[in-house]
Image (cartoon, rainbow, N blue to C red):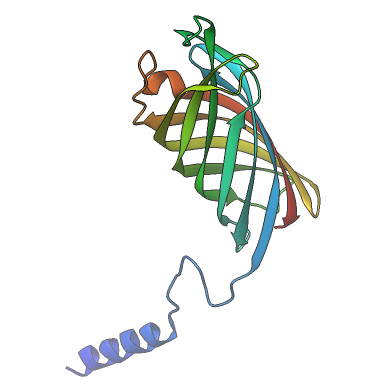
Length: 193
C-alpha cells in the first residue's frame, strides 16, 4: 500500500509541473501585412490575367487571418452573343475571408498554404461597352500552396499554384467549371511578420 501511495504522489507531482500544450500560448506575437497579387488563371478555357490585393493579421509568425479581393484584367472572349449580335467578354471579381499557415516563417525560404472563403460576381459585356448584358453571383473557395522568400525584414515574395472552386453560376452558356479552375500567382507582402 505504501508503494502505491508513493507512486500516486509522484504522479500528482509530475502532473502539477506539466504544462499544457496550446495552439496559441499566453505570449501572442502579432504583426500584419498587405500587398498586391497577380495571377494567371484559366477562365472559360482561356488564360486570363487577374490582379488583386490581400492583407492580414499575422499571429505568432505562423497563422494569418485576413482578406483578399481579385478581378480580371484581361478580356476573356466567350461563345455567347450580346443583344447586338456581338461576342460577349467575361469579367470576374471575387473576394472574402482568408486564412493562411506559414511554415517556419523565419527561414529564408519557407512554404505557405492559404484558403479564401467568399463570393463574387461575373459580368458579360460587349467589348468597349458599358452596357452589361448579363451579371451573376457565385460562392467561391480558393486555395493555394506557395514558396515564400524573406527579401528584407519588412518584405516577402510569395509564388505558387492553386485552384478556384466556384458554386452557383447560373448564367446560360457558362457553368461553375468555366469560372473555376487552376491558377498560378505571385504576391508581394509588405509589413511586420
